[in-house]
Length: 279
Image (cartoon, rainbow, N blue to C red; front, side, top):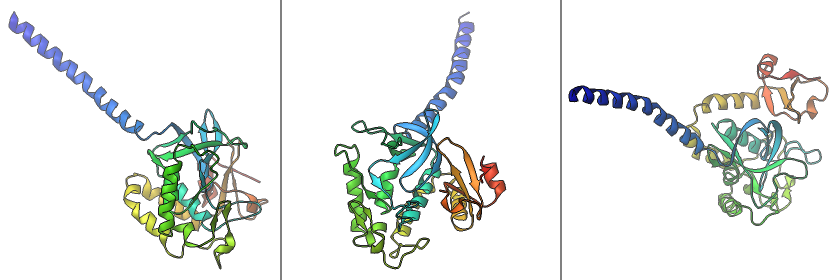
């Protein structure tokens, strides 16, 4: 009788062990994903330039203004495109589009929105600060500092000092960066569409971070798509404040005034991405 009871207990323990093992693995995977989230996870709709993007937040599409940084302009009505504006936009898109998880952190010591209704946030990709990376690479400056108690201000200034010392990006032209923004005339001979990175500092920065970027499974396909869009594709995709997606062909009305948030190489590609033909 004792032998029968012993065999029953052993069998029961074996079954319990088999049932609990999958739960342990699931918990480990979930924990790994949670480590990549700083603040609140969001779904990215589009990356507009070097310091703004659109996300789905609280059930609607909202613009996000990256806290404490200022990127050279891309679409300003008066200033137009500024040197390093395109480079900051492209790098910001690379960082965000290659991430598995994008999250927002709101500063508890400041406002959650600006006067335009945009969310004010620190942006993270897989748990790493986008702002700090862009500052280190010399693509943006620390700016719009209205709150001296802001959480990451000291870290950002340290990153900026590093970029300055190495003459990276925007810092390779004396006088280009000011407390109020950027002075286009300080980059002699530059015109929209040209590469202002004369000392090659941006290429070096990207190469330094190549190992980190390679960890993403989608890095290769995303980079190829980005390069193709930047160099060959001319169909502009725009997402308005209501989340409506429209694409515009070269030569159509208002094409030059459309702010592209995605570029497509064919109408078929745009339609597959959920965009409708605009007029």
